[in-house]
Amino acid sequence: MAETIKSVSPTSDPNSPYYLPPDIHHPSDFSIQKLSKDEDNYVAWKIRFRSFLRVTKKFGFIDGTLPKPDPFSPLYQPWEQCNAMVMYWLMNSMTDKLLESVMYAETAHKMWEDLRRVFVPCVDLKIYQLRRRLATLRQGGDYVEDVLNELKRRERRSSVTSF
Image 1 (cartoon, helix red, strand yellow):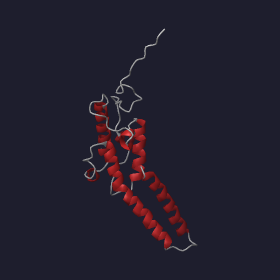
Image 2 (cartoon, rainbow, N blue to C red):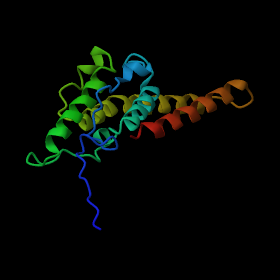
Image 3 (tube, helix red, strand yellow):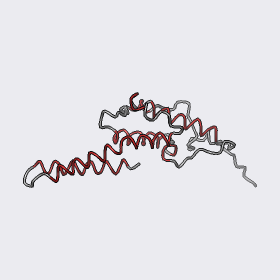
Image 4 (cartoon, one colour):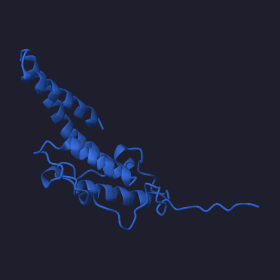
């Protein structure tokens, strides 16, 4: 006896990145602090936002693994909708001042990369400044240990900012 295999549309399959449930949540529902250039919250914001995107199966829209399909593809319209949703989440999770520097991106992936370009130089600069401070210190005090711990913490943060 032959089994019939049902074809499931990617927009109705909960395991598909193109699926948008009617009750989809906004990251603000999960208490994600707004990303701000004035605060030192990029790494923490990024970790939380990436987790949110993984839960909603939309991570591929920011990391580039789910590129824009051909306009004649049946996945084109669902991709456009999901990309717009991810961009909406991104725009609503940052300050207006920061939004001005990334809002013209055409895709969520491009917007994510623009944000990275804004923040990674700041993180690298902080690591450089700590290394300079460390070079001028002398051994024999708790202060040296504090600076070393801060340097290690910043380097771990830097490795997280690489994507």
